[in-house]
Length: 67
Image 1 (cartoon, rainbow, N blue to C red):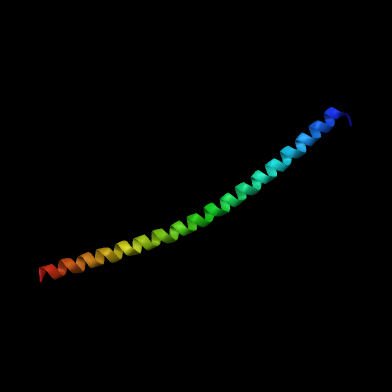
Image 2: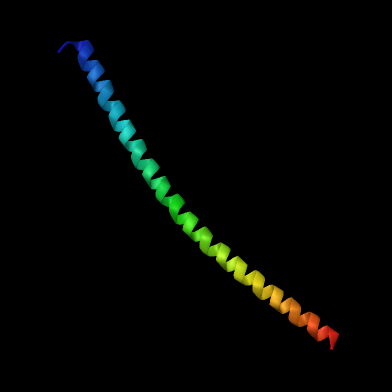
């Protein structure tokens, strides 16, 4: 193999390794995104529950003021 072919092969190997590393980074980021989305769904549920609780307390206060 001549020097040019060796250099080309080396560059291809380096490019492949860089792509593999990026693929691993993307997989990790996707996993983090999935976990954050799940956490977000849980937090949205808590917010909804707290809003319902708040509205119930407001209604109780309103009813007390009418008495």
